[in-house]
Length: 184
Image 1 (cartoon, rainbow, N blue to C red):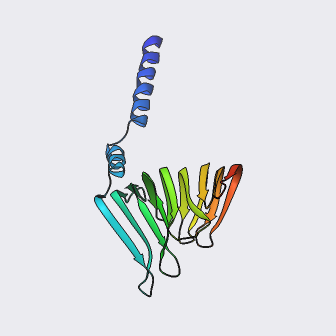
Image 2: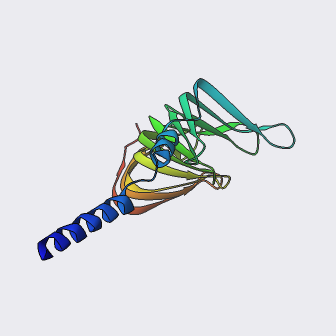
Image 3: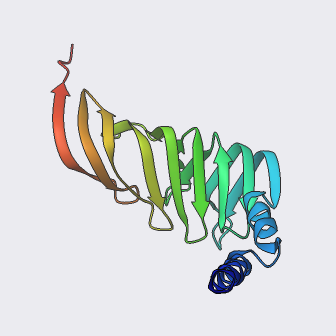
């Protein structure tokens, strides 16, 4: 009798544990699947932002865009971001293979990131890295990855960068090498 009672208690405990940990319905799995599906997809897009006077402030173009409303971000393939200066001239252009744009006006550029100066006679011509975080509307850049900066007659290698494109200030977190080329 005691063995039957122990067996019955084990069966009831096992059944209760199974019912306790079993998902009540498949809504959680369905919601997870919906979160992973973009709300919309666009091909060959361009977005332009204008100031209150009608002048172009910045523009973004990409081969492909996927927007995820529930997750709160937009994903780009081959994005190109162009920033205009106070004279309404294109001053900087950022490009990469992929980017993620968060609603807090933060963009994370990934794979083959390149920032080009579009103005003549600037000290820095371009910089390259693997990952870069751009913060807007402050036009600031930052990362902790290896960085290569090419300028007029020099290049700099380092790790980590903090930059302000508006004030044109660049700070390497860790400097590794600077090479100056002899002018001919």
